[in-house]
Structures are given as C-alpha cells and as structure tokens.
Length: 259
Image 1: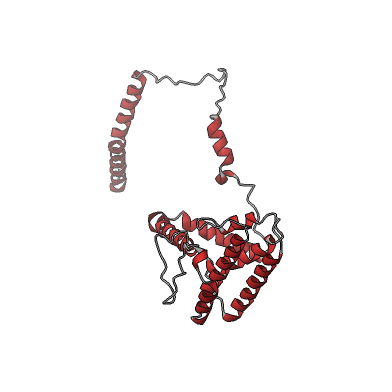
Image 2 (image 1 turned 135 degrees about the vertical axis):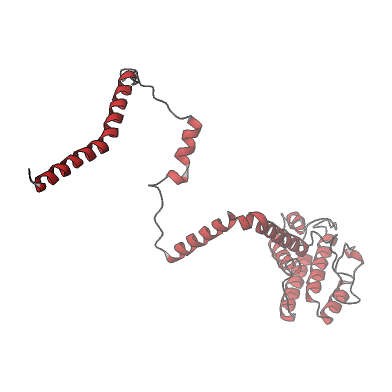
C-alpha cells in the first residue's frame, strides 16, 4: 500500500467517526421519545353528536323591538340628501345644532347659559306686558304726570287736560293710554260696559258683543295695546290719527242708542 492510499484510508475513517459522533445523540433521543410515546395512554377526543336536535334561540321581544327601531341599524332607510339648496342648508344647520346639543360642552356649561337666556327673554316680555309691574315698577317718563301706572278712578281725571299735557311733553304713548281710558269712561257712563280696574281690555270688548260699536272698539283696543304694551314708538302724526279715530268712535257712541 502506498503512502497516498494510506492517507486516503485514514481520512475516510475519520469521516465515519465524525458522522457517528454527530448522529449518535439524535438517534438515541429519537429512540427514547418513541419508547415514551408508546408507553403513554392515548388522549380521548370528544366529538359532538350531530344527530342531537337543534334548539333555536330567539331574542327577547323588547330587545328585538329596540334593534328594529334603532337608527344605527337602518342601513337602507337613510333619506337621500335634498336637492334644494335651502333644504341642504337647513339640514346642515340642524346637524350642527344636534351635534352641539349632544356635545360635552353643552352638557356642562352651555345648556345653563341657554336656559338663563330664555328666562331673561321671558322676564323681559312679561315686563313689557306689565305682568310683572308689581315687581319692576316703571318710573314716570315726565315730571308732573301721574298716569303712567294708573289703577285710576277714571271719573276723577280731566282727560282733555291730561292728554294735552302729555302731548306737550311729547309723551305720545301716555297720550294714547289716556285716549283709551277716556273711551272706557264714556262707554261706562252710557251703560254699555262696567268699568273695573282689574278687568282686561278683552273683557270690555266682549261686553260690546251685542253692539255695532264692537268692531271699531276692538280695532282701537288692538292699536292701544300695540302702542302701550308693545312699546311701539309713536310720533306726533300717528298720535293725531289715533286721536281722530278715538274722537269719531266716541261721537258715534253718543249718537247710537243703547240696545
């Protein structure tokens, strides 16, 4: 045997020994695992018997009704956006208002601000209608005139003088009030109504239900309320027209017999 053949034989032998060293532990481990698996009992597998009858469960009626009426589940019933620009603007505005009313800021602060504003407007309107005049009495607008907050005895007032005095001071609203009170005095004197300070103007209108004077008196009552309670600004020209209308009504009442 030559030296080269000897070297080659030694090389092959070393390779065989190396392979046996690498594969030996794995083979032993595989043998051990196989032996353990053969000694353990098999794990039973539980399967459902498909032949058992199925039980259908239904939701409660109240819960089912809530689901059917919940807008979040109405996928096919959403209204298409309107084509009218004004309608689209209104829809957008309502959406913004709804979002604001459901916001946390509104729930914490703005709802109280809104309620306070509504209460303030209501108090203001009641004051204008003199419903709260016992809480917020108004000061006379001109010195020397004590007819602004009258619970007056109309039979003790010199109306012509009082009206002229109010006109001279350009207190035209008060002049209209005095013209109306003067008319109430004349209707009372003629027996057509019964004057009482706590009566409403509508009650006097109803007392003339059987008289042809009622339509004109109702019209004058509305104009008086518009000026006095509505705080409508009135000038000298408007006062002159109203003064003429009241004068014509009073003359017609004097000529017409009481039925």
